[in-house]
Length: 281
Image (cartoon, rainbow, N blue to C red; front, side, top):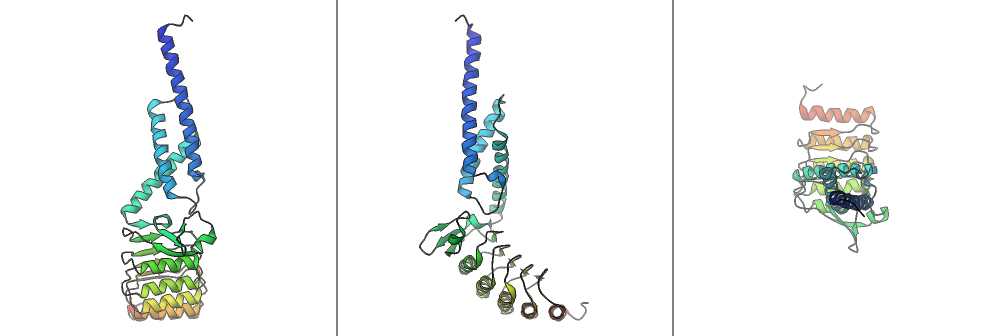
């Protein structure tokens, strides 16, 4: 057709680039679909195994776009997802290095052996019977997974077999008195090495606080107990005051935004004076 060889060569290269770009854009859309709209955020609503696979593909796609300096870049949504997943992987690596585990790092199962994921319906979470904790986990940090009393009981049973766990954070997980009682039983076990228990924003109430107070008073290594926003009243405060007097290991007791009256506050203050000496004002 009269086209000189150099022009024909450039045209073929451009066609190949266009084909590659179309393929990369298609893969980018597939990857975003696999991420399940992860870019919108949301805790406790995704599968970490899918994220690992997604991260690998998105990273490869980003490198290709960067190296070739494409005229037509991958979509903004794809690149945003890349950044999010890269950041999440870096955070996961730091958490792993510190021995920190979250919901997806543990193996949750129902009585008939079915696996339960963070994205599973609430009915599955309420049927949890067992939790396997990896040996590397020294910190369990779960915020807002709504495991409830059933999940807390399963986790407590597993804690009895995993003395390496030193810190347990279950903020906003729908725990009531029964969940607190299950954790209290685990704390009373002679092998328990839990140093910090954070139950902020649950609803353990006086009953749960009494159980935890008795467990602490009986001994154990617990140094920090957080019961902010837990409907704890004077009965619970009394039990916790007795725990402060009985167990010097407890160094921090956090009770912001509960139902404790001035009478309950005085019981706690007397316990602190008794523990720390008459010089405390």
